[in-house]
Amino acid sequence: MPSPAGRRPNGRAAALAQYSRRAAHYDSELAVFEPLRAEAVDLLALREGQRVLDVGCGTGLSFGPLERALGERGAVVGIEQSPEMLVLARERVARNGWHNVTLIDAPAEEAQVQGRMDAALFHFTHDVLREPRAVDNVLRHLRPGARVVAVGLQWAQPWAWPANCFVALAALYSISSFEGLARPWDLLARHLRQFQLHTTLLGGIYLASGVFEPDRTRD
Ligand SMILES: C[S@@+](CC[C@H](N)C(=O)[O-])C[C@H]1O[C@@H](n2cnc3c(N)ncnc32)[C@H](O)[C@@H]1O
Image 1 (tube, rainbow, N blue to C red):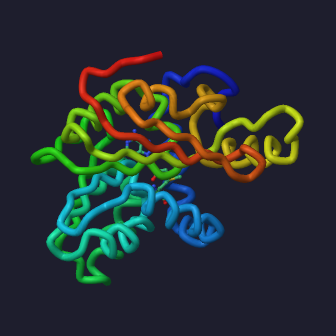
Image 2 (image 1 turned 90 degrees about the horizontal axis):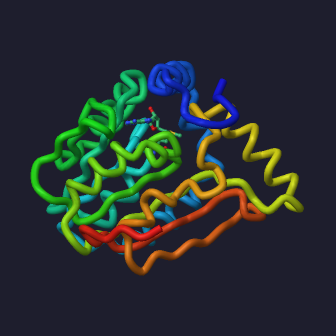
């Protein structure tokens, strides 16, 4: 269960336990969000042959849409810390015969990626986005001008209480802390230009996008 505010000291252990429990039924739980995933991949505006980081890739549900956008000459690098989620991602890659997908078994704070990537996707990865060391490490692996897209839960306006009930329940189930749910994307946004924010579900889900600019830091 996540703490209502502030990161837990054992946030990583909590996240690992959460996804160990969820892995087997994760894909069916996420089916309802597939249109959002397609929108997120569209926002990346990928071109054939580009290389994309899928941060907190889970079971690899984004790999198919990313593969279709990048083609065989492109590459997907998935970073994932949950062993149970990674097993399913590996099975998906093998089943589809994708030779251009690399999986990195590490927390986003520590993952090391060869070369600079053209884009990064953070799809429902609140825990990663709220850890400054993880955001910094991912951005270190992007080329200047890389497109970055993040999608996830956020608190809606107080009047949108049904959306906030959904956000609270989904957060209890899927993230290790409620910290930052008002502006989950703010650590990332400091490093992006052309930052754009759209919301859906009465404001309870955001889609954020922008272009990575090294050395940019704005509040
Ligand atoms: C809600 S799932 C999203 C999975 C995938 N992006 C998707 O859209 O289906 C969140 C994933 O982030 C992973 N995760 C959480 N914290 C992480 C971290 N610090 N480093 C790497 N992966 C992390 C979890 O293990 C889980 O697989």
